Image 1: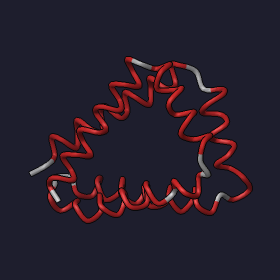
Image 2: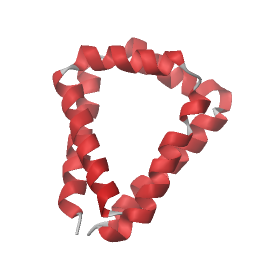
Image 3: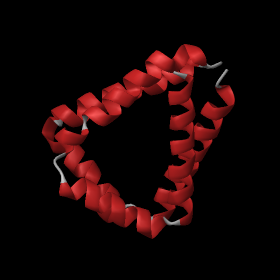
Length: 123
C-alpha cells in the first residue's frame, strides 16, 4: 500500500502543478471531462480512492489525517452519486463557468501542499 500512497502523492503534486501553471488548459480539459459524462459514472472514482487511502493510512505517520481524507473521498463519491437537489450540477456549473483563474490556482496550491505532505509522511 506504500506504492499507492506514493502514486497518490505524485498525482496530487502533478495535478496541482498543472493547475497553477497551465490554468486555462486544465480548465478546458476539466470542462470536457465533466460535461461529457454523467457524474454518477464518475462517482465511484473518489469513493474507491478514499477507500484505498483508508486502507493505506497505517503506512504513514499521520494516519489519522489520511483516514480523514479517505472518509472525505468516500463521502464525495456518495454525495455525487446521490446528487440531492441537483447540488452537484450547480457545483460543476460554478466551477466551469464562474470560478476565476485564481480559484483554480488556489486549488492547485492546496493539491501541491497535500501531495507534498503525503509524500513526506510515508514511512
